[in-house]
Length: 178
Image (cartoon, rainbow, N blue to C red; front, side):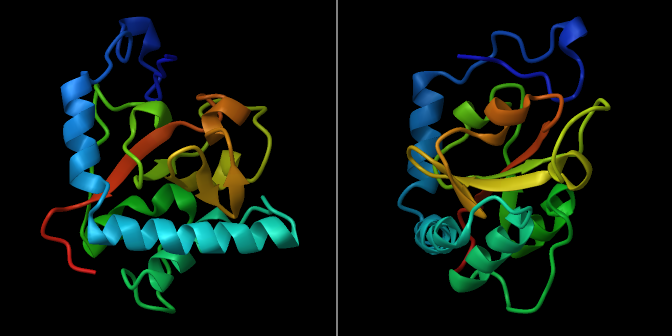
């Protein structure tokens, strides 16, 4: 498993070799998979990403696609923006999500199914795509990542961790209503 150092602290050893135990991953999976909000979001995102796949995917509309998925799942009211992808964290927290990114969950592979992954702007010059400025957001499914299209690899595998640093792993709080 590849480890990332999204906060630029690799030289100090942060993020190296820290992976959740099997028990911790099982507990995370139980907390999110089967959660009504997570199930509704995954269903809405699969449909929305499928629509983008038919029209021509990956057009720089990841934040709009995830916001629409949240609306279609009944989690977010229509018409309210959540900002650029990199700025969605506070809005997600207001909706009832919690950021579980930590030293043990610091890469897309370590995130549970149904998590909303929020990436910041590029940490170095020369990164390609709109995400280098506006960040990126995607929802982790079982074998894919959903946004304005369906990808079989997370965005860090495509552009690299320095070009798409993971800044948040958002899951519904237990008390969240959908």
